[in-house]
Length: 442
Image (cartoon, rainbow, N blue to C red; front, side):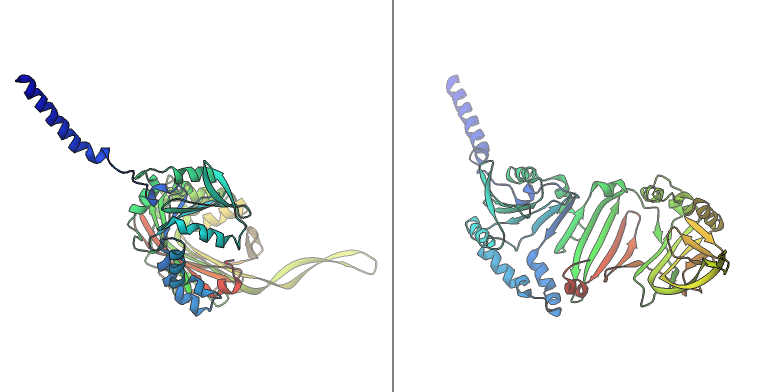
């Protein structure tokens, strides 16, 4: 009787264990997701290709870009379906400081991809090779590679294919890289269609924990919305108001800064403070003395040309061949340049320090910053103004922190939109027409 009871108990336990463990015993081998395959990198990105195509279509047609139909939503969608790519889901891409980059695209039908590779081979020299018993397609001239599995397509350009391939090919489900996990959980720009993310080591060295950029565009401009999150509280904040140099049509470069730096100048361990010191060391700039005197306002203008008088010595021979040196002046055209910054009671001490370091030099009533054109110095309230023109430039009250940078005709406009204790938001506007007309960015 006891043996029968024991057997029943054993069978009951065995049956219970079987029912509990059955899903695990007969579980299918579930493949990794696209996100699990992504290699770690300095810069990570996500793009909804079809949505980006739809957003930029107006810009393409407005500027009458050749072959714009090839970038349309309809064409890209049809090509994706034709070659087994699911472009309705995001394409993930990444890049490193070294210049190598890669991308992964979701595949719906891997049997169609080879046809696409064959078609691509009509335009690019493609060879195939074997890596760990797997066929890989190589673009030798471009130093690129292409590999696909059952549900993904991997594109890579660089010198570390094997390392990246191992991560992609041998991935395990839910074994996502920590940087990608952080990016995909990021709330900022969550609904944007093209986002770039970075927690690059060089950013962290300067106290920046995370940086994100999101795409936006209209018919005339392409813009990047920027977001930066700091590890520690920021020791600067935006001023309500400051003075700017007035800008003109000839202005090619411009910078306006209006910050409260009271906390910054008193915290020598602040990453921004250290970065400024490190930058200043390249020219032996007295950064500590500058911050001690500077009141946080800076305005710079460059553009156009102005005529200034320069003094020079001319050697003249008389009738007896005696050399006489004569001081003369001549009109010289120099690039228009003005810089204005606010100071406190230590302002004059700062100027003397710059003169003693040779960063600022004086010739009669003129000054030079290193290799700048000769400048006149004026003062207005608590501002020093250095300018190439005969008279001090006009100024105006302003509340913005922004700038303009023109490189070979391409005019970039950037701004600092908001600043809190740990976060900063900004924008970069890039005109489309100049880039399109030159077929290049710079």
